[in-house]
Image 1 (cartoon, rainbow, N blue to C red):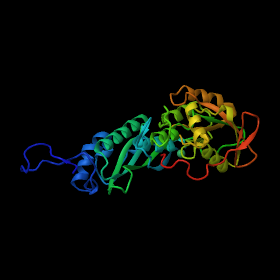
Image 2 (cartoon, rainbow, N blue to C red):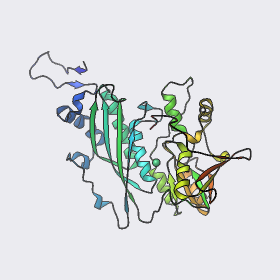
Image 3 (cartoon, helix red, strand yellow):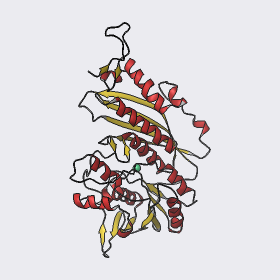
Image 4 (cartoon, helix red, strand yellow):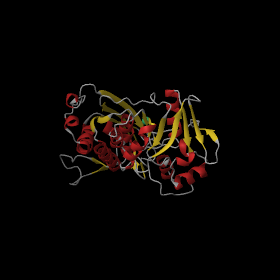
Length: 358
Ligand code: MG
């Protein structure tokens, strides 16, 4: 079995507390083992006064952070990435960044986050510790606090190691009006860096491909990059993180929400050679591949160079660039001007290109 005696003769009395090096069903019982998991693993890693009160619901100090005219933003996301660990990140970092970034895309500064874990019986305790520590590190970087959580355990074979759902709350300072509905003709379209790194890194990490590469996921909290963008004083019409479905899906959503046409210039879109190579081999379009640390921004043309400059000064926006512009026609369309002088339609990806990527 998985129980390791902690020393002493067999059948000594009292029996030593069993130490589990793997998750067992009892860790989800709500009883003694659940308590041990919370006290020995979750509390030390996530340590903060709101979480440690241990009541049925967290009571964050909202009056200390909200000012008149501010709004609240709430976002929730489930994370089922496979494998759990990949170059550049893991499911814990992803679970924090995914939700933090969705908050940041409406101009919200991250405040609090909750995390719900579904653990598979047999998951190694050490892996869980690594994941939770990684969540803490990403949360510290993003300036968000994990204030509540839940753990359930399912039988071996009923889940894939571990799933994490997170729900985040953020504060939108008064005056920020950023939405997928606010892009308008005359806007310039900006991208914060290279595309496709996350999707290809996770795919390669599965070890099912006949090649290896050095591609690293870009899993990153974007909240401080977003603050750098707002600090220019420019009107930020739209922000979006091109995750599942890639840049193509995000831009199509925005084109529909705002009823506009987006024209991209193919030569301006940054793609690493390794990602381009993998995409060509697999028949993928890099515009359809998921990113977890990139954003697209729509700003008035006159502010575009200021905003690009502010991004390039930030470590997560060094390769920021202009990739296109907004026009009024054809409505709800994304078009690509290719290097050879043609124009093609950029559509939503059809079906599920890369399952279990986030
Ligand atoms: Mg998003």
